[in-house]
Length: 318
Image 1 (cartoon, rainbow, N blue to C red):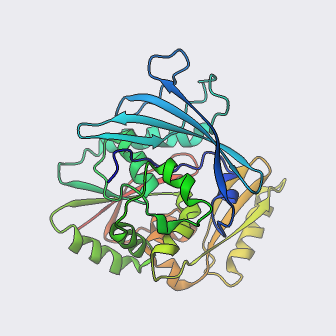
Image 2: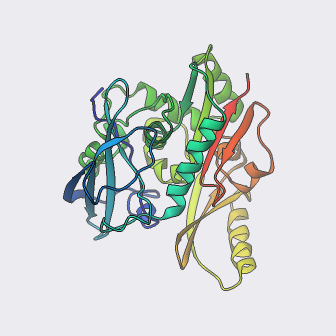
Image 3: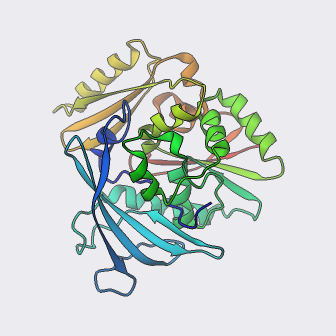
């Protein structure tokens, strides 16, 4: 595995439209990048578990004419050099574009929660590759899936994601297995995970942004993706908006839904399109309305973000 390991972070709501599902047919390129060294006057406070020695700012453009700025922190743990795309605190005004503070706060909450539920030396964290690498930077957690593979991406986006991720893993086995678990029936997935990590404590981390990674998961698994998405304009009356979403969620769906605010005037809604899909591990881990109502018996909820339920951390009960 390459020394530089990174996490792909969608830094604003429009990124879900550009890079995420329903399709990834756009082409991407790095239009600009600059590097800020630790100790420089404009080097931001990242509040990571590890100290970053430099920060790269990369501007990504697409054929759809959108552009995004990613911040990539380079750091070293006890074993090797790594990199991670991170959120910058909003009080740091020296960088040209700042991501939303709610996600930055969510990762700081996760860091504190990880320390509160102190893991033993035999604890492993499972999550999609970008969450896993971000969790490593912010909490020092031992993670399993540390980098993506080229097969997750289209030809027009793979070169950029290779740089943003710090390099692809040439062996797709772990990525394939993780995608299989997330899209399997929850009971079957937990049994399989317990067999694979027989003598280890296993924690599962998901974020709402995992839904923007569904094309990657679909590329790595034989299972279908049981989620659909639609954008709603914010209504003056919240009850009117919820009523619209509920009608849509029940139309050829299970009725379960999840909301994402992507701009001051738009909400992205997600629904589960089948009863089978509602029983998948990913659906039960994410804060869909049906999942919030009950937790599977072999999962213990350790942490969920205070704002928008952005991050959820579970531990498997053996």
